Amino acid sequence: MKRLIERASRQNISLAAVFLIGLVCSAAAQPKSDFEIVKSFQAKYKAIKEAIREAKTVQECAEINANIADLEKEYAADTTLLNNALYPHKYDDEINNVQVDLQMTQSKFGIIESQVNRISELEFQIRTLSGKIDSLTNANSKLMASLEVMANALVKNKTMIDSLNRIISRLRQGLRARDAAIFALVDSMFMQYGTNLQTLPENQKGMLIGKMRRHNVVGAIRQAAEQNLKFLETTELTGNDLVQMLKEQHKFGSYWKGLGPRLATLYVNSRDREREVANIDTLISRWGRKADSTLWAGLYKEFTDNKIPVDTFSNASEFVTSLSNYFDTQGGNLKVSGTERVSRLRYFLNHVWYPSINSQWLPMLVNEGVLTQAQDNQLQNELMAWKEASKPSYTLLYIVIILVLAAVLVFFLRRRKSIPPSQFPSQN
Image (cartoon, rainbow, N blue to C red; front, side):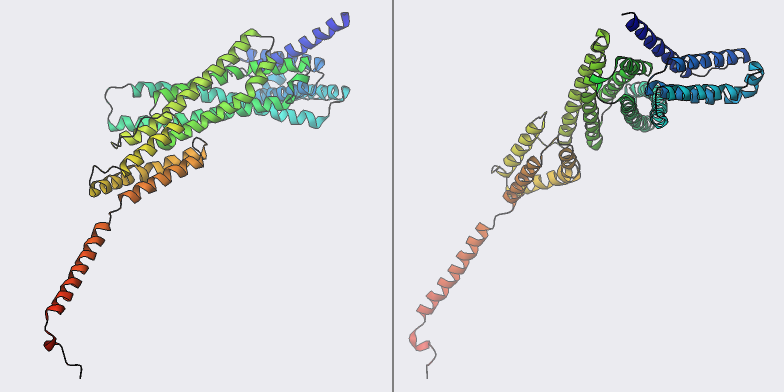
């Protein structure tokens, strides 16, 4: 029992040391005095030395390796100052010392250098992505605030509208880039520890949890979903932008569907984290419902803006039924003249079908799996039936021609009978 307690204590110390290094090394750079620079270097250096003494796993060694690289990079410009302050030691010697200590620790536990290098690369990527996420999130928040102000403005001139469109475009790009960075960050973290969390040792599981907390993974995902939902509620997207928005929501939701259970496994003993994961489930579901309703509302607006009286719809099945009914009604409407039916068909084709529905919406909806190819084919066939029904009928013309020919024939036959035989030409 005593050994177990001692082992757990050493693991906790190791995790705490690694956590401290990551926290200190990731702190934002602030203007410091010479004294503060020296004290900061010494504190980080001491934390690294302590972490090396406690390290036992490849993940711990890789994170320490990344911390040494960060330390060297951060204080490279202060070499002269540190050489004077650390005399008789030198800055380069101190960096070399911890690198040698780390290599000795790795050799002691049979940790292969190539493994450390591979996981260190992932660690560098994690830190870079984490900073990128923070930067993008802050930039997106500022753009969102500007968007709300401009969208709520009572007077909108051309200059304001152009500025609003530019903000919307920049914000969409920022949201997409931030989401991609979050996915890459989480993937890099799990790649360091493997995908099977059930068999992951408790000390490594603790390191992974600590790393996720330091980089605020769950909070970043929640904030991403919130910003995407808010963006959708604030803007009025149309056409391709709406379909692209739905595609991005599906991608985010699919990724979370795979990640959520893994996070739940990690946080099985943390009720607060479990609730946070459940809250993200709810938030992404809300975002999905809003994306769907916005998509169908945008598509319906294509018809109403052009005064095409189709029934309302809120999903793929209702959309196909609504448009099918419209085609059938227009094609079989015998209450209007043939000229009027042709005029309505041409208006629909030239103002709605060719420039928008058939050229943009239907291909995108089929590509994204919102509509099936069979549903698309159904609409194409029913539109063709409307076209056929609107073609002018030549039956009456044919009847008139036949009657005229018959009348002419009867006329000549009667005339022939009325001529006396003596007037017929001689057969001699």
